[in-house]
Length: 373
Length: 229
Image 1 (tube, helix red, strand yellow):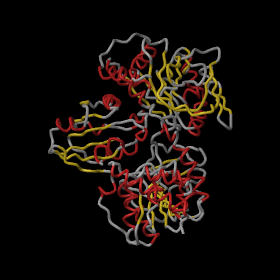
Image 2 (image 1 turned 45 degrees about the horizontal axis):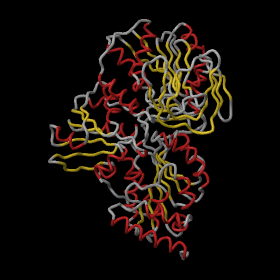
Image 3 (image 1 turned 90 degrees about the vertical axis):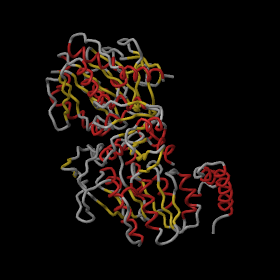
Image 4 (image 1 turned 60 degrees about the horizontal axis):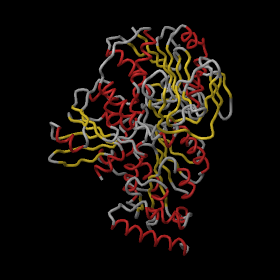
């Protein structure tokens, strides 16, 4: 039975949610914030009696959370975080639902505290790479925090893509782990063993360390493939653990891609927010007209130095337009790589100048939401 | 042929500093000066013949590995004493000092610059602007570290801080001694400040460079300077 205080907090938060929606907001942050302000224990209280599944990692959180929620929905109602609202209040908001299952996307820095509060059945760990370093500071710092919490959460099953050495280190002392490997994938930040500090030995995208950390496993070893393919498999492994049947996903469902018709042109938007996601996006087929959108607000990462760790060479021969608040950071970076671009004030202006009817738009986080959502 | 040696980018490449070598090569190319960027990994021996050596920012464990590898043969110190140019950013800058401390341990540095680094009490993260006597205009960059670097008697500060933190003490950023430069500016610093790239090329070549017209580079640097608070 929920306490009076918790019920009161939920009721006020729901009223706030309705008001917020009336005012045209998506209404996921405010009610969660109110709920936690009135009842700081709300997350742990609301999680009681629910099967909680958490999804975290640098890239692929939102789409993989959606995939897991879809798979788990075979078994019953699922409470889930909507639009990448992955901090404590987003979790609190989603957990207000009476659904027996909760599938939540959790920010990397918030994950340890949400694990401690929700006592989850399963935690799916996707990857850890450089992202928003002004906030995360170092990849290792995030992995250290995960390592401590994963070791302590003895009731939880961790599903871990151990091709990422940071993920492997995070779960190395955990009690219940389902280790998954696809192999053949390098890690741009993976030169040093996160466990012992030695130089990792990498051979054809597989690593091993003198301390024993390695991605070589005998079971659950899949062939290598794109992030979308890998995340679909990981989501289905989570589903299998809770007793759901496997679901086949369309590739685009597991990429942050959205196609929008704008002034007679088809703009294919893709979320690109850090070196790993840019590199993944640039490997895909791109249309002859490409628009790059760069912002540098808090959630984009306020430092754009990482642009120099991405190779944009594949854009040679494309007609490239650059826009966003940090358009010049991007324009100069690709200029030095021999790619000239046209700097424009916004995506509409770029689209008007595109020759083709289909255009690839690779977009920073904040811009992606403004343009697509 | 100008040899630009990019040292341990897999270790000292956390904050995009690899771009410094790209910019040097690009701006040399604008003057039809041939330049080659040579990546030296932790497992490779550092060549003695480099004209410009570059070191970037790193996480703690990576910084220590790099230090251990660079101690072998003291090649950097020997090259610098013969006049080679060295540019070291953040963790790379700390390595060049006489010693640096982490929370748990103290290490002897490579000794190219008379500076010492100790852990600070907070993380210094954000845009930074500095004024160096070497340049007419301020330089801009981004800093992300938690150390304090103190200069000894045998070294000059690289710049004074206009906004941000730099060395975290005495309102100074970086250090320099002849052709060896250390700074906390990421960005990468040579992308954000083409005049600094040109100065390093001049020092490496030992002669003045022809001016070049790269409007986008100048527009970019100017725009970033205009954002200084």
